[in-house]
Image (cartoon, rainbow, N blue to C red; front, side, top):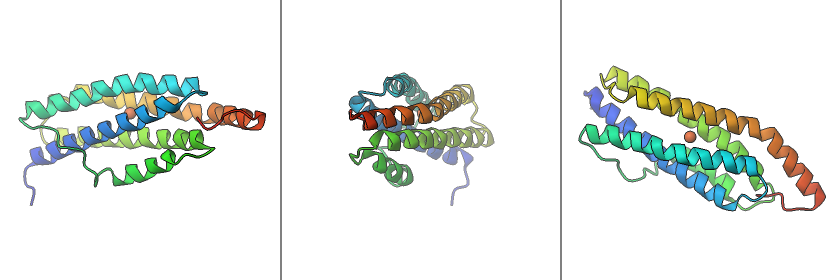
Length: 169
Ligand SMILES: [Fe+2]
């Protein structure tokens, strides 16, 4: 039985850290393949750089509590992993699946940071609240950026498909 809110906070830090590692994997994989969607590529490249900072904030918070990040937790990431697996099946409409998955993933992260901040506050662990609030704002900005890219990405996908060009990535 968990009776120490600090323990709940440490678990939330580790889970959020694992989530950011997953985010980096997903974005790096996409960016490597993108050729015909420069706006998506630019948004992903900028957010990859931001995500390195988000990962560092979580590692600093864990270190300050005398803890270290655990290795990637497959269980916790099962849901996200399944959703993302969809996007990794090579398909003619790969870019569309990635566009949907990116929007879903950023919203998943927003929920994770809101929850982390709530747990931290309840545990009296507010030393990194400002840093995590910054991460939350970055996720919200990226969530809006990828949401705004769904329609233009679909329009380019349509144009390239109908024009006989490579449309998938
Ligand atoms: Fe993110």
